[in-house]
Length: 433
Image (cartoon, rainbow, N blue to C red; front, side, top):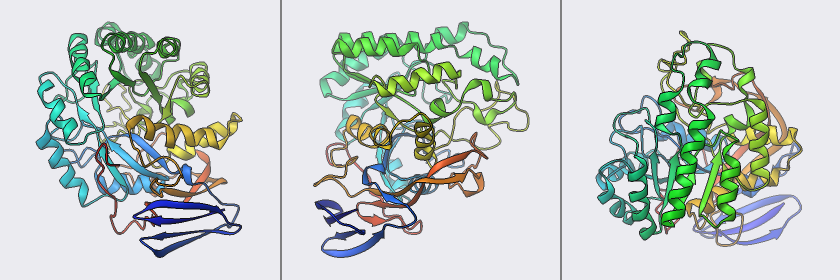
């Protein structure tokens, strides 16, 4: 094991230790983590999830800072970056960011940073939001599902990227082409195959091609969200080889679930882009292993149980989104283990990778000077998903009843164990975290 001393919640030194890990914050001993029951302390296991929809204020009945940060801590996630939409107001102005921070401050059980939003008409707000410490900006190229966060046109995307290139800020993009979606079959009901046809790979591929070319033209830094189409990996790999500053992520649901296994009417599985076929999933794993895909994040996207239309089972009516911030680490490790992929690769995709791309300078690694964010993780322990044991506000999950391997025993944020009673998380600002 390791012993590390901490000052202000950061690692001061590391050394080998045979039986336990001790941490001292501000010179005082705060905890003792013993090696027991084959549990391993793997400091870098503590994940940084850069894609979480909290929805507070405005749609707190969907999710809120208290429930989502408890869920994150229970799943070994010590830092989340909140998405700018689904809350009301959206985080597209400085006053909206300040409001969201007020709600988050009193209910944070892990550390929280914030994305800003890029929507038609708010180009003048991008620099002020950047100055207030957002970690970058999110946009959609197709309807977002909420009226207050409309998509950018390709021209608007290019103009915003010119602005962000001057700021040295990142644009993260929900990449589906609006025209391709409009031309896809629209008769969606209970059949999952119909929903899959309504959001074809081509919609992703066209939008990702647009992002690549706009990034190439402007020199802006871009990141493609929740890639589900394996077709797009060749384009991304080619652009990266050309020196275009573009990265991409995927999510646990695309890596662990396949279209062939989704029953008709099972709207808990609905998300956008959709979960695709098993052969597609295999290529996504290849993209992770060869570095084309940079990281794995939850895209924790909750709504009320009623909006998921679980009883009606109509994929056309149901709200999309998978809630998995509490389960992401176990999900990805379970599948990686089955495929013969080591835990150290999973840690890179879910901790150091996202932290580095977002610009978290003191998180994502167990190194001197970094925050002492740790998880006690038992990589061989199995458990069965029970939605009643999740901290998510709305306990609906496509993983209900699924057996997973790898269980988080305890989580520490900046050296202090999360007790699920005292919200001790910090609000993070770009350049300071």
